[in-house]
Length: 124
Length: 124
DNA sequence: TATAGTGTATTAGTATTATTAGTACACTTT
DNA sequence: AAAGTGTACTAATAATACTAATACACTATA
Image (tube, rainbow over all chains, first blue to last red; front, side):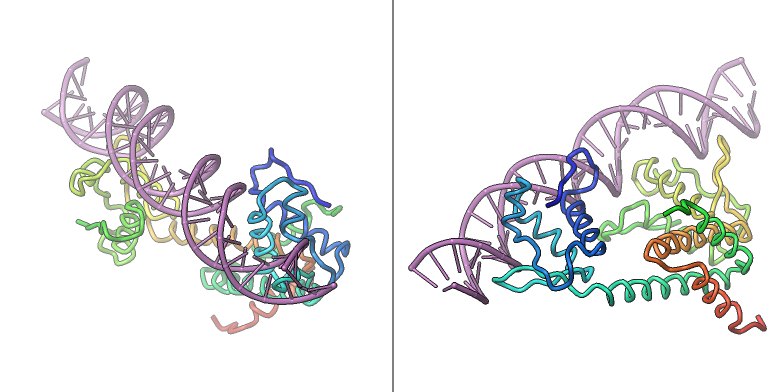
């Protein structure tokens, strides 16, 4: 189902969480579907079940999945999730810009930043 | 000149940097004045000169002081300090905007935010 | 020009934290 | 009751942060 890279400098649980984030966002794992069990996935990847558990805890904290004791983990409804995350990010950004304005950063300076950032890797 | 707290959970170099930040912001150490040497301060506090050096490096990165090889460290003037702070703030903001872009926030959405923020309290 | 005072770089030892694993427990379904 | 599930606790190990030891390089000045 997924692979892990032992050369990577990222910890296993972050790699695993990342793979599932991608699968969920891509729709390969639709909302409501069951995640593989911590034990089966641990066996498949030949690592400890607790490492899977940690990855799943991370996904849960980020709102991607929710656990049901004794039954398994399930993919959460993510349409709302993405919106909520965007909203939080925008609020954080606003706060920084407010502080920047008080320090004398001008509107054109921010425009320049946006110009640059929205030109980087435009193909994506 | 300053004191350190061995009960504190904060590392020594952060405590030291913090004390000097306060002294500089309060004006007790005016711009252009010399900081104590890394060796003299290390002796006074009975710790290793490299720990003082690390604290001073932090202060330098934050724009509070600047080093002159062979002569000592000097308190920067407040204008330079504000510049440094603006730069750090811009970098933080850039990082947030990068993430936002990956989540699908568009350039016009950021423009709208800027429009709003730079209209608030225009008298200033 | 020698010497004392200054910052700086490199390395190493130690402490702290992060990561992963071992084991046992509790819940749900059949 | 049994098999499959998530979860909590502990421990071993890996990685990182912190501090120190030592040596080097620059500046002023006697």
